[in-house]
Length: 213
Image 1: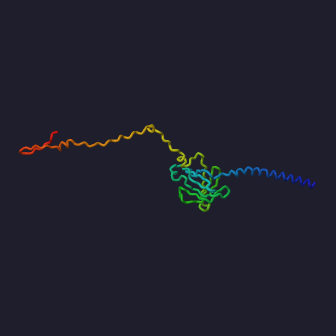
Image 2: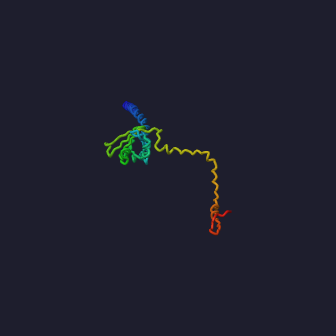
Image 3: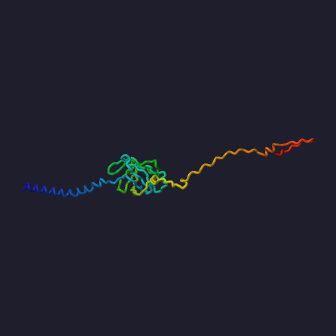
């Protein structure tokens, strides 16, 4: 009887454990796809001001970012593809840290430390700090729509307009002007006539006058 009671108690205990573990196993199975599909910081993000967008890319296992869109097109002349993020390394927990960021509006030559954390597929937390995270500024960027046109893309993708042929292209070129034969100078008859002079010797004088042909 004692052996039977022990076996019965063991089966009952196993059944209780299975019922207790079952919900946890289901929850763990559901959480695995979420862990695999963690949001990525890569892509184009509109900054917290709404006046610009930064494209974050993988640069040799680290994150780097460049300005690729401006609300004011005039700013794209000097700021397009300007790098403002670099050398940000993964530190675990879907966070990146240890790199640098600059504020192009204040001082494009001054670098601050930066920590980047995806909050969701559409939101990105960017925290800039100077050595200590107690002295920090946190910004939330929004993923840009797929229709956003990056600066320089429209000019680079627009082909030059084709030349429209005109009717003049089918016409033969005009003939060259005829060469002119140099004119030969004609003798001046008046000069020749004036050079021929006759003399009349009178007894009291000599008279000179133009000769008649």
